[in-house]
Image (cartoon, rainbow, N blue to C red):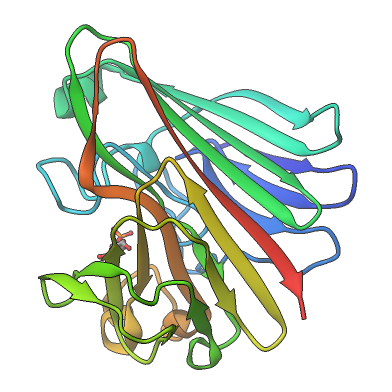
Length: 273
Ligand SMILES: O=P(O)(O)OC[C@H]1O[C@H](O)[C@H](O)[C@@H](O)[C@@H]1O
């Protein structure tokens, strides 16, 4: 699989592979690595990469008949461009369309585009899907971002208080987060609905602000010690060093008419304390 490195004029840097258009590393200008990547991750075609930013499309998790999280994260994407914008941001653009294997799984023709843009302390991920066929189709999707954490016990998530969520661990719908600040001390797997404000991941040394547009929902996932130990491509202590905050549309799937496009974006801003 091809490896692509892009950097901005002001020193931010990202690394991606064409397999899954998968972003493996993001280092903001003057800052440390922000994405978790498991050292046990298999970098082979056909296998998902554990960490970075997997693209979930056209099905979230096991919520349908497709392989878990759909086919986009395991597909070979076409790189359309890589370099710097006129303003000096680093940028890479990928494209994915149907092929025979994908049509056998999901009988729809489409064009997906994924643009990664970085400069200074900010990373922006733009994902769009166009229905290039002549019948409507539905999909669910997520940018499944794994954030690198020093110690999950010392990490706080702000911005989720008062939101309703589906608890994937218990299968319960219609839960409500009462506490303003979420601390993770075991398995957490939640789909928050109608997320309009940003989520801030606070650690002792930094904050990371995660905002989104186009995506309706946000997933927060950490497998905890027990489930984490069962994940073959995650290090034994991996769960302590990661948290996923995913921009997603799951609760109400997108129904895309022929000729129409849908787009969603996740923006991440790093701040040292
Ligand atoms: O192991 P994977 O197929 O990559 O899925 C990893 C995780 O993705 C999402 O965050 C889901 O909410 C979790 O239920 C799932 O375990």
